[in-house]
Length: 196
Image (cartoon, one colour):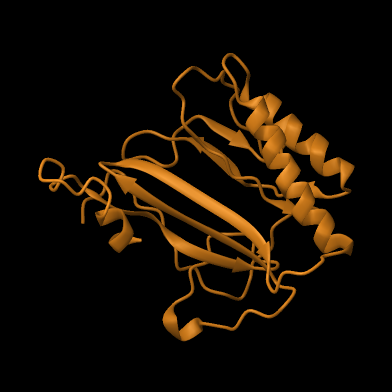
């Protein structure tokens, strides 16, 4: 990522422009819901049929671009609950994108995600937030919650022209609740008020 982002805006005027990794490359397989960036000694081979979620982010002058993609390893046809959950995530993401418009609310986006996933008999994952982006900030205070319930809610806000949102839609074929995994955490959030 560092090599590729250095090729962008590479003229003399922009040579001193800060650029690089904004979010590490993560590959989360099957039941790992996201943000898993294994250390070199924790590498494992992907098997045909594994569902792999890849996400990463780069920045130029503090402005972040994040990307993610889900795929089934090995290609070919996918059937059953695995197909349901992948299609539910795709269509829920499309519905969420259509819901983000001027004067619409974050609640409408959450409802769109819930409506689509219900059609596939799947569930949005609890605790997942999409954030409004700002310069040097990938998790602003204005959030869209993936699944709203009495324990997990966010303050409602209206979208305005010029808002930039990192939309994160994660879907489960089960209840949509997270559990602790045996893998260790390798991605940490920087405290904004701390200098290293």
